Image (cartoon, rainbow over all chains, first blue to last red; front, side, top):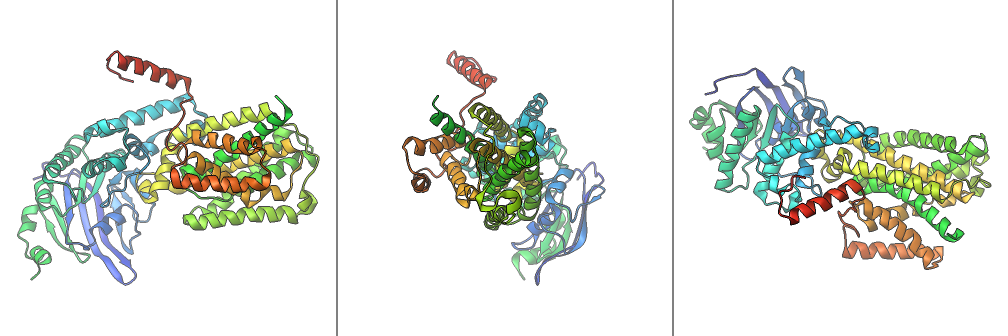
Length: 258
Length: 296
């Protein structure tokens, strides 16, 4: 299916995450190649979001290792992982209230704005140039998700579907090589889901970003993912192409019961 | 201008500098600190001691007091900035109390509860006005640039901020130190305009006063903070309120504000002060009236 299987971008080796006695993720391994659109699926509580939280540094793995490109990223701070090129959105939308739509996107581009604290406070001339650069970049991402008309509105006043799009634009503003989308279709109507699939393809093709998503919306998963991992009770029970997964007995059992 | 009005405005300006620090820290970044008065005390005492006992000029005294506040701020910040907001508030309150107690205890240098007398009153209204304007410009730049966005992001959702590549701890530390510098500067100017300082001037109620001013003006508005400082510093004097009624008035104002306008007097509004931006707005408004496409 994939014409250009790239190098390994993200490698997870024997990832285990334990909260007290609960094993949320148990010895999970995966290898994601550059240039893919891939997905992690599984019933509620299977540990999918926990895997995302481990990749982005929110949780420290109990055991195992996560590598991005050539670096081990398990154990370093979330902001450092983001700066290495992994961006994400959240299952429950977490936009910055009080910052307008444009500033939300600019906030995510801030670490790439090349000016220091003192230069900024003194308002040195070079500072405003860098500021204009990230502003026009942020507008570019807003245009991509078709939110440019709302740039001066507050995100809390946007409809749900647009908030989801804004979260994607904000994640893109960190200029990632890999974007993690946590249930991007949750709460969207069929029309919005189609738009979202279009947008994910655009991110993949035009920006060349590898996509890993968690999703319950099967039509979307089967429609855009090239490769799937299936989790159940923290364990990987299947891995393969959507066609393979659809007729996998283990997976059917996990979703439908015996 | 009469001496009365001039000294009133001087104190309002000095207050404003301390308020700006609280505005950045509590207003924009959501770090609820009761420690600002501790940094004011450090500024007042270190600069006075440097000038009176070590014979240094005023500007050197102020610079030394700021450096001292930075060192203390770095230490206090390192141990408190990872705490949850309520614990952070308590810890900074403790810090301010420790400073006050230390001022009373080390009486050989600080004069104990008697304080320090005979500080030259070399700071007058024009000096305070110029410094205050510089501080306002610095804070306006802070708010407009990525630092302001980082602050609001950290205040709103620290986890999401971190995931968007913001080093939240480093950012909080920067704001804490900047606010400490503003506090120390304000304290030093206070010492050199009153000629006399004592530990009682740096009570926790002073921190509360600064916080009330910020809430009254609006947590998100620098213009609000400036306006609220001038209004609340000048009003009691103009109404000839005794200082014992000051706190009552302030408390009343904060209750009314929280009930009727929780975002503060100014909300998100900022007065545009940059002449270029005003001119731009006027031009684009005219263009819009003529029905031309507005690129700016």
